[in-house]
Structure formats: C-alpha cells, structure tokens
Image (cartoon, rainbow, N blue to C red; front, side, top):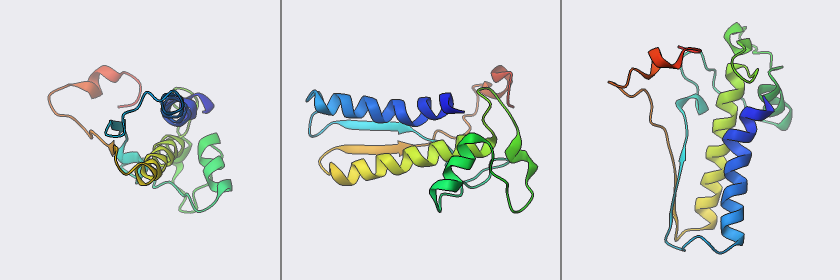
Length: 130
C-alpha cells in the first residue's frame, strides 16, 4: 500500500517540489495530474473518508472498517491496497494539486480523470482488476 501511495501522491509532490526548487517551472506552465473517479467514490470504490488523519491512514493501510459493511473495501489487489486506499490516494493528490493551484495562480494546475475510455479495450488487457 505504501508503494501505491508513493506512486500516486509522494512521487508527484516530490517532482513538483524539485522542479520548483530548481526554477524549472515557468510561471505560466501547465501541470496536469491524472486523477480518478475513485477519489469521489465509484462502483465498488467507496467515497474516501477524509475527515481525519486516522481514517486516511486506515484507508491507505487497508485497515478501514466501513460502517456500511461494504466488504469490497477489503479487496486486495496489486500492492496489497484495498479499494478504499487507491481512491484515498487519488483524493489526497487531487487536494494537493488544488492547493498548489491556489498558491500558484499564474500556473494552470489541473487534476483530470480520463474515466473509462471507449475503444481501448483497456479493461480486457488489464488482467488483474476488471
């Protein structure tokens, strides 16, 4: 689960910060983070509970107990992260990039979710989730 968090949050934070510290970002640059509908809840992915740090940590570590009894949250996929953890990571990153957009108003900083893309057959090719 920490690998998924590092890949979806920490790596992006570090890259933006490193480029910024090295003055490699133009004040008018465009930054696009690829988000996910899972950040707001979708299908078997529950809406992340971001009310406090304990809930966030529980989602990421796959120890969150959904009060509605949604057992799909405990599904274990690649990297041993439950479905709630992936959505939580995407939600945290979206919040981070939203904060960056407010701090850097001259930059165009966006989080976009490509959603399900028709005609790619990505679901059939993924082999592990769909």
